[in-house]
View 1: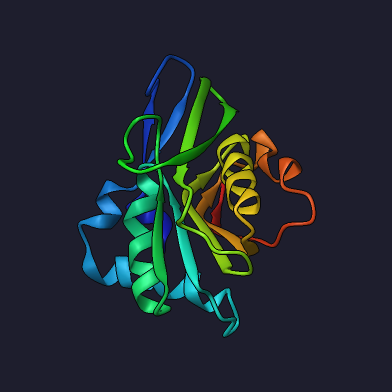
View 2: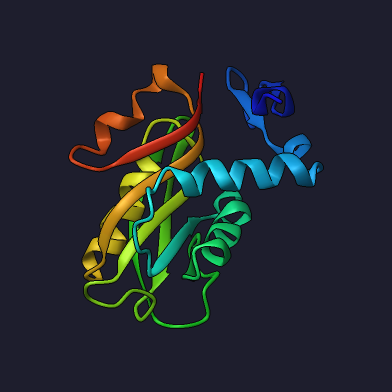
Length: 170
């Protein structure tokens, strides 16, 4: 079974000129969802992970499943004013605008081994901002993993010296 068969293209979403990769068909099939989780877990080669950080909002979908599979805590990174406790923030650019992300100040402890997960690596802005937040709190980033990468957007270039794994490349 190919995971690519469960990702559909949506032209001009969220704005004209963007070809959006929709993972909702993949989420409808529990067998394919489990396969995706296993591919992402296998990429860590048995490394200990203390926290899985998921970027809003599609990073939450597999992030929590990865955390459960790895017996790790789950940390949501959200857009401004969505988290109820004290936060720190980082701003970033994406292929169709700019935004800010926040994390609870107490979510990562110094020395925590962290996996960062999101559904797609595009321009790398979101991932870079999440890295900044984790590192500011003293976390050690073990890997960033993604379901897919849009390679022509060169997001990896914003993540030098970081271990990056993607299940699918477009």
